[in-house]
Structures are given as structure tokens and as C-alpha cells.
Image (cartoon, rainbow, N blue to C red; front, side, top):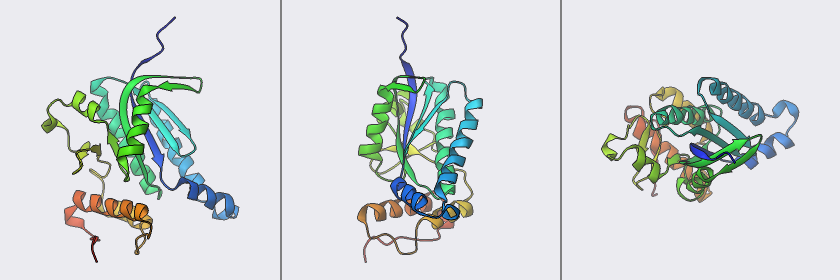
Length: 222
């Protein structure tokens, strides 16, 4: 029997607020539907990128997206750039996401998916990411960059909890990026602690990335 399992980079991405998007579009008049077209447009643009990246796999179901690429150390920059652009494209369309990136044995064929890399990436999204960030597994970071001082900051950024995540605002236009964020986050932050925490995190990430373009500071204590 042929060995169907090979090593892949695997990203698992979760769309935040997906149930609200579905409820909005399914319960609104046809002329008021807005999320399905944005999601389809983002999905189509990412599919088009597959033509330029040999071996890239893209699967979307419900609020989950899986991106996978055969493991080669030199391919991680290309893979992480793809994930970064996907996340920024979602932001542009008013959609936040979080996720995990790992690696492991993986097989996908004819809609059949069997992957330890996906399980690892899913667990990162579920247990570690929390905020609108796509966290790269510690094992993968250590494998790619034995000397953590060599981690490219334009690709990955390290947070105070020690996690490295995709630096998706890097090299973006600050005014444009703030416009996208400002369209998502209302002037009065959410009452829900979970949603409010994500909103504060995103504002702080923007301010850290563009310290000369701070438009809004967040006071944690009244």
C-alpha cells in the first residue's frame, strides 16, 4: 500500500462571529445580504493563489478554513504570506478570524481529510489564539528557527504570552488598516467581556504596529 501520509504545513482558521453573519444574511431581504458575497469573494481570491503555489490545498466548510502545503522549510515564508494576506483580506471585508498553524502528517484527496497537522492547528486555535491572531505552534517555530533571534519580525510577531503569530498588519497602509478596523469596532466597545477583549487586542496590535499613527487608545481601567 502506498504511503498516503506526508508532512505538511497546516493552518486552521476560524471566522469570528460566523453565526451572526449567517443569521444576518438568512433573515434579511436579499438586497440587504452582505456577508455571503464577501466570503465568496475572499475564498475566490485565495483559490486563485493556488495556481501560483504548487501543492497548496484550500478547504472551507461552515466557519472553518484549512490551508495546507507540503512541508519544506524554505516554503514557510510563502505559506505564512498567503495566510497573512488571507487574514488581511477578511479584515478588509469586515470579518475577523483567529487560528493556528502547525505541521504534521496529512492527507487530503477527493474531499477526504486525514491530518494530525490539522488537529494540532485546531487545538492551537481553540486553546491559545483567543484573539484575532493566527498563532504558529511552538514546535514549528523551534524547528524553523532554532535561534529565536532569527525569527523574521516582518512575518511573525511575539506577544507577551510567548506565542508567535502571523504579523498580518506588517507592511500595510496604516490609514487603510485603521479604516478597516474602525469599520469593525464600534465607538462604544462591546459589553461582552469576550468580544470586548478581542476589540481591545486588535486596537493595541494596530497601535503597536503603527506607533506614529495611533488613532485610538484604549483605557483598560476607568
